[in-house]
Image (cartoon, rainbow, N blue to C red; front, side, top):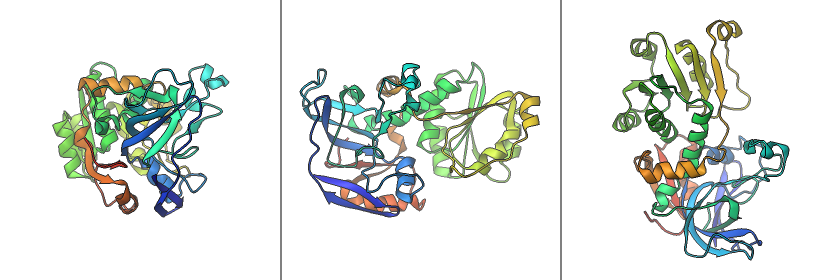
Length: 340
């Protein structure tokens, strides 16, 4: 089969390798659609301490090709998507429902081979039947599951004023979930006009071009600040500059992944005096099923996020372009030929 490898930082290619051999509790999946995540880009750039070579890819859907001897709930031909986080469910963290801190965690695309391949395997407990969803729609279940976990960590109260920084696919999912959660209004800020237009189409009450004049616009929209600000940029300076626009007793959520070695300047006195809350959000935690149901119901629309549909052979060139910030919105890769 064909598989995409990151051989070392800034070097990738397509290789022919053997189809994975199944263990008793594993499912072999013919991969139909895979979304390119920022994590895949970080792996390509060498930003993470990760063993190379590696097959990345964790936002995916496909068809069950074969099952292990002890698999009970799946059979060949089923349309599925998979939670890419393989937790042990036995350590102290897993026993406290803190699986995203599992002490024996294995993740697709870094610890074990990922989904940018014609076939891949995963434990049965990670597999979900996607029913009537298209393969392309189902490739968005994992990132939306991360967004929903973020909302479990910092859910807007009824009639809260919300600001989302970043109108990429993640920010646009946050927008829809916040609107569904009863926010009084949601404002979205970005520096890409086409993505702001998409935010408006998907229900943003205000869109703001995030230039030097953005602060004035923020004050006009929310004179006393925003009750919830969600950063989806992962840019430390953006986060630092937004703190004055968080309302007293408001919440700032760190959703975008900042570089590990970067810092922001913030006054502890201001946090104390204004009773600010800073909230992190790491991956997903038992939110895959609810994410799938949100997309199936039409409550969260995802197909407008797609910027590019490519086949596996085109991916090395496309990943380089993504890493150089030469693309827009989401790239979906189809290892077995482009489908819906």
